[in-house]
Length: 350
Image (cartoon, rainbow, N blue to C red; front, side, top):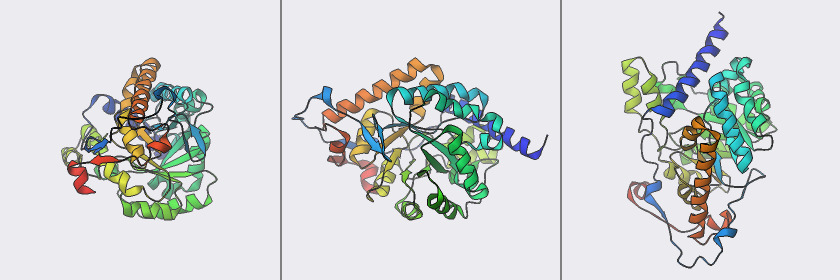
């Protein structure tokens, strides 16, 4: 077996292992800060709840809701059915979706079906491809273009995951040159480039570099949801790495703090990291987000059935609509900037 085959097989098996751990392990860590945020109740909403529209425009695409299906899986044959269900949901509800890291399929084209099944299930949906910043630096725009073409994506997410790489047995510890690679892609690609964190948040300083590099949008990926350090701690076979994973499971910028730090430039921001309800999405929109990304809350019902996934999304949509009504917001533009109370550690940090 060649070194290339060894590498792609290992990457693929790791993706399946990650999926199983996320569904069964205790991998949520830290506080997102959404419990510290309270929308100001409006006793005189002066609008009809049944006519409220949560529709939004994101990167010139109209979506029926700010709920965004965040990157989860792909890269192993056993993940294809989950991705198909997620794609069906994106199509049915006309919401955006990002696929998991496409590295495994780029290393081994035999695995492309686990990603392309999303576009087959969602011919009209807004889809985002996914490639790591380190892989972009190493492979260049060719891999980025292939990732987009694989699912006929409207945009490409470049993910940043230095924490996960730092505690992963096979992790890449060299992230030098990544901002230059991102800048080159943003300036040369024909598609929008979204830069996303994977659970440790993006600071104001890093956001400034990404906006200057030409990022079309930023996905904050803050602390408070799935901790990839905790995931690696559960899958690690080396005791020292398991301990490191546990030690750093609470590392990062809480999702709300990251969102507030990144917003304010007038550019689209996806809030993600620990959003667990439509109420959390409403809070994120009020704080300046364009979309609210969820992964783990949708992964578990997606593993069960399409029906369970659809029901979960309907619940989230209902929560969002009621929260909009109780703030007197007829649409998301009206919800944006609504007054909120921020208390606790989140209030202290900001």
